[in-house]
Amino acid sequence: MRRVLLLLALSAALGWVAAASGEQQRLGGLILYWSDDPIPQIWAIRPDGSNRHRIFRTRQNSKRPRLSPDRAWVAFDGTPPGKPPLSEFRIQLVRADGTGRRTITHSEDWEIDAQWLPDGSRLSFLRMPAGGQEWTKSEVWTIRPDGTDPRRILLGSSARWSPDGAKLAHSAPTLESDGDLFVANQDGTDPRRLTTTHAIESPAAWSPDGKKILFTRYGEGTQAYVFVIDADGTHLKRLTRAGTDEAGAWSPDGGTILFTSQRAGIRQLYLMNADGTHQRLLSRKPFRAYEPSWR
Image 1 (cartoon, rainbow, N blue to C red):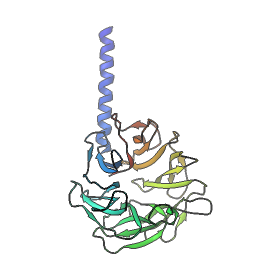
Image 2 (cartoon, rainbow, N blue to C red):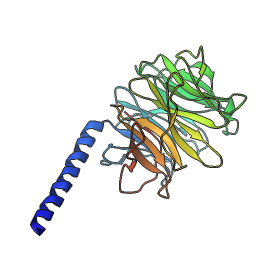
Image 3 (cartoon, one colour):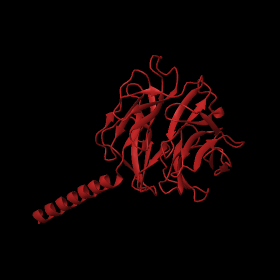
């Protein structure tokens, strides 16, 4: 009898390992994020929690890494070389191997939150008055990867491109809120409001099929929850209830959602199914992680 129980336990364990291995192979891609241990730096990790590594080392701060469509470059924002840490925020590029760092924006404002257009021809970014106190005056701009042809698109923040590059989800101030959810055309025209609340909402990513938008809704105090909504503004659904959760990204196949939460004491990376079920830590080894992306 003991031998039978042992075989059943071993079979169950092997089944779990096989299922986990299958999920790891299915998820694919690479997750980027930033961590403030000891200072803000950009990191990468595989969706199975392996091969965690810093993308490059710098004495200045670096945040919000985004991998280019061809996987050759990482865009991020931070203080340029030669400046005191946290004194300025500029959009910068570095090769995926950590070489070739260069700064592509140079205004007197703060410039953060770089996002690649799906074809890699341009990047969008957020420009706000230096200091960050007047963030409701933020504007979305685009620029070529070589730093030329900057263009203002619209008033707003947290711009996220649809998979075909035709639409732009973003947050913008309204009479009811400092940031409701909108969708506009690529050039910023014809903005359409998706939500009407007193809360602040920040889009994180479109689903790979372009049908849904993942976003964070910030409540009272430090409360934050992950939501999903159809791109036409219907079928709003809350996916998390811990109150410390911020939306991150979709897996390349659209079946899994990446988010961060402080439910375990420090902000860490979590995964869940696209319907909000099976919420779990990405890695059993704790490390702080913020504003991840997944490509």
